[in-house]
Image (cartoon, rainbow, N blue to C red):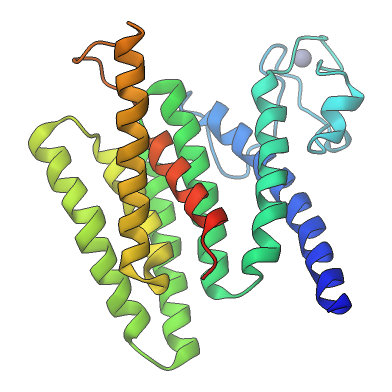
Length: 254
Ligand SMILES: [Zn+2]
């Protein structure tokens, strides 16, 4: 019993550090993708003075606190959203790792969390979920499913993944094409999540979808009642899918 508590603590600390690094990567992506900048192997620079940020000034959370939220060179403010993403990802992964631990399926889960939160943040900012994120996510998840299939000497992970992708990603893609109410980016994000969750059962993906529609309706009605949105205004749906996915992961115990 004591040993497993120590293990949970170690996993939590490791998860929190991993989360802080992922949050930092996320802020860079959220800044670069909508601006059409290079995503991979790009060096971080200050958005105000464009001086390259040294490695020692780029430590998640720590650097922000040490520099008091300002650039070392031009003293321009570093957006608060950067540290918010780093702290919330540290908390989230600190909670997730002791719950789910480590393995091929879990890596797929963590990757989907990363893609979903990044997609939702970009969606809130520019009202679309970029293809570069969702295509990368689906490809990586598909490779992990293949890995799982080889590991278990069985085709069932591949079959479940294809089924999950068709039923959930496919149906939303159709709704998106037919109604234009839901973006195709949302459908692709659901595709990433469906692939990641396929080995946990289709019912679980169904609950995530149900939760996101419920959250979307509640917030949509609240915005209409308070006069901040009309029946015609479009509300980005990615954040609701992501929120529902995260709540389900934290509440459910597979
Ligand atoms: Zn600067």
